[in-house]
Image (cartoon, rainbow, N blue to C red; front, side, top):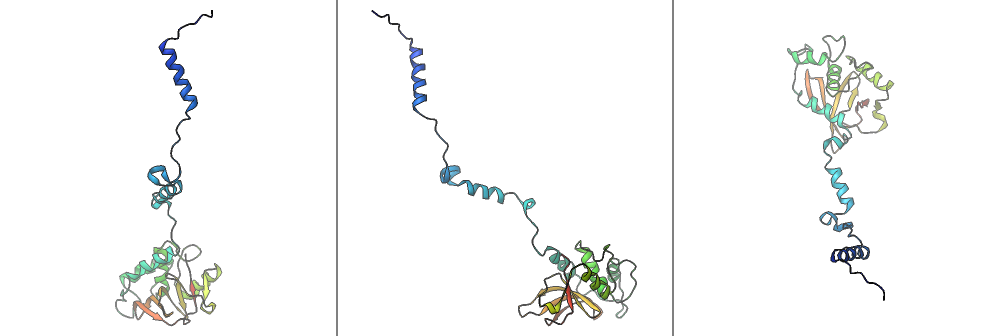
Length: 206
């Protein structure tokens, strides 16, 4: 007769556990919409991107123009003291943005100051300009100038150029007229509205 050997209870239970492991595959984590409380992987990625915060954001288009407009809106009403003098303590501040400037017509000083406030000073070395002609010639050389005859409407923050005068576009009104803020307009920083096509051209700094 064959000799039979009794297996211990512990060996039997160990063998049963091995067989169960072979028969039953390990459980998988839930996938698709059931994962993470019903959210898909794509939704989780979108949430992660949204939570990246301001550091992940790109600067909006026209940010330079918006900065220029914000800088000059608070200057409206600054006036010459006395009237007709081309001077005042605040106008002296505008002149500091232009190398070698002196007391005189100050519309170009004003836009040079505004551009410097926005971090985009005008001129090859950021020296600013006291002359409208010199500023527009620089803009043409550097591809920043657009003639009004091109029919392209300006954007807020663009410089708007006339014969011997310059200002800053604050907005384009629904009827196409251009609202501006200009230095040395009636001896002060003034808000004006102009018909479309009245300017010679525009200068975009950003």
